[in-house]
Image (cartoon, rainbow, N blue to C red; front, side):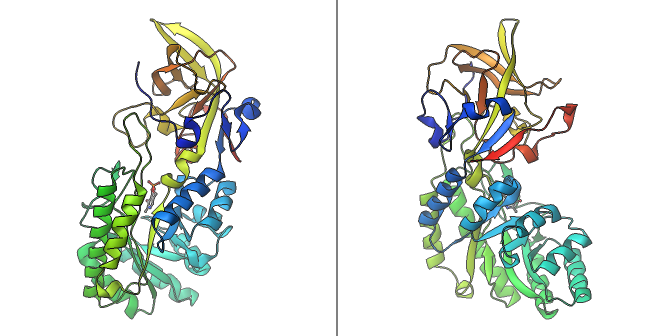
Length: 403
Ligand SMILES: *Cc1c(COP(=O)(O)O)cnc(C)c1O
């Protein structure tokens, strides 16, 4: 038997039939495989952030879950949306005004730069070459572009699942070259919006997050001094993680907020009038989503029992351990109509794909489940449907629903 990660708090104390957003999971038993997202859980995470970090802007990084109905529910709750492609940009523009949207990502094509500048979205500039193309596009359109500079920081987020700073990187501009670029953007007449610094993802240590934020503030102040320009906005990045696996402890967001408040109170004078933003994806939405799949077959092989579902890594790659993890560990799973019941057997829960990678639960302890029963895979609200190889092996896509 191998352990599973913890159920998100909204599901941990449920008994009997799983409910999502107050509705029984049996409502969707005929619609599997399906993702169900509870927008009230997202609203609760936003409220917790607001209480812990008053005065800090909250941006939603929509790549975590760009489903249009979820986006429509989240957009009014946050201060901005961060997008990473023209496709995400058009979804964001459908639910928010352009001035609150920023566009980051390496390799923005000319058409993407043009769409962003024409709409009035802030571009987080990722290289000197991209700056040249953005300025030329803006001149051609006769529009003053809103440009921020994404910094490749000389710091990294310790203990994060995915480090994105402190080393050679396709993301952002090496810190040492940033002041010259800022001077150039300002001299070109661009509306310089400030800095964007993103040092990593999926961090559960409040101390590591707070240390990174403090270092980011110091870095932004140093770059601003060298550029001779006060940044209107400093996007401090995000990296707030969620507990996926056994032994993971939730991030102490209140502790992060307390340390950030202290760091901001003591910030260098050049940042006195700046606004500060934190951009979050998974922390806002991961726990709000449940992936529901039905048992198609139950079989034994070599002493191991397999529950074979009607969907697997083609919809929820991350739960199979093949998206951003080194060692495969079990996400929390449950038999949907037997929440809170004691385990009766050890089973491996697999998808229908012809690959041994398609394993959502490896020798997990569950109440007994039969063909036709629904298995719930938790923490499916971020990097699920759009971060999975849906075309692989030609099974139908999963439905997605917001409650
Ligand atoms: C992916 C990404 C995010 C969101 O990361 P999460 O781990 O989902 O919070 C935020 N900002 C940038 C620049 C990103 O690339």
